[in-house]
Image 1 (cartoon, one colour):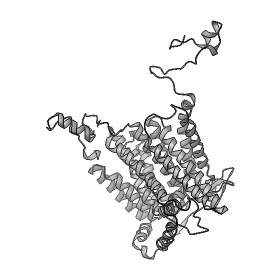
Image 2: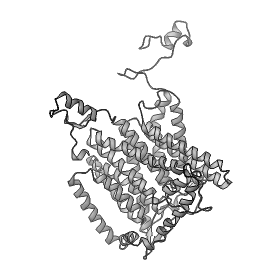
Image 3: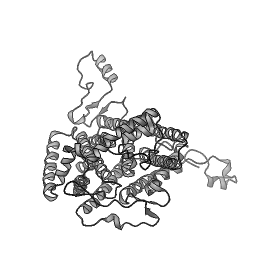
Length: 505
């Protein structure tokens, strides 16, 4: 007999009946009161983490211009993994009980974002696109499905907090490897990207290599990224996460975590990019506002010493970066971006609400619009721009909710570290066409999914009061506070008064 009183298949055979006469046995976890989850979910979830790590390895370790032949820019192997993750998520969503229960704002966000892309895709084809623009629109849609699949897999496919930590630490480690490759390029030791040969992949364009910028023709590097700007911006987005895991590292692994921080931080200036400097300033500023003063002083002192050492080791680089901001009136890249405004206004006036179709604004047919905000406004109209801003704003609010409401200090700090990436990423999108670069888009989508996963795993529902380990309320809903004060006769209460210290802001 089974544990629930039904005859097992073996007992059925002994009694002369067949298995078809009985319902299938539902196995139960030891000590649990509910059946095992369906086999597909039970087998899918652990490989989800593996597939996500594989996706990150393909993003960070393989040069961005190596693609599967015949597929163009969407032929990156990481995009194929993203499509697979999207398919697995859809298969799981079609069966009850295969996704985490409860409301998940990231699902609605990503569903709305993808719906907007589909509307723009239809609008573009309604204009009877030329073949070259139609192919570009197809690639854009495939690319977005892959990125949304990655974010959904992170949001719903990570079962425990340990899985989320493994994924984010993988992002940090791979970013450190990319930074190391860029450092070797800058020092003219070796360009490892020239020696990466993978069967089935070919370069759709010439590898970017080492560039030059400034009066001294200082080297600027891209590592394995598609451009120097992308290299610096991605490292700037990952830096707060790297600092988080360095601050909370166990004693035996602190030197490894701090080595990753040093590699990432020291490689950001090597891109010699305004976008990278602005991104790191915003991301670090958003993280530093929640630190106690002692940590701020320590980080500032270490950063100042690091800048001095960097200046003496790489003389002239910091001066070149400073001139990027002080000499913008004579910088051709800045002037070209300003000149693009007339074109954007003209195209926006023709189709203000739905745009002319995402992915159809080709540089070879129109102009190189080096600004994601402008590109989205032209391609997707006001609706597309709202979807893009929401893609950064909603995860930011969720990560901040973790910061304000999680009970553990480490979880609160991780929430703020994730939140710091979204204002910085939105600012970076106003300085270059960010979603045209797969490493930036993939990293951003992983952070979007991570914000949703952390929000779910920490269970920071806005209507539930949260207390810390000392029993003090970290935060409490306004209605609960009003009821508590009313019952106490509007007298101060030790347990009813919420406590929000400076470190929990």
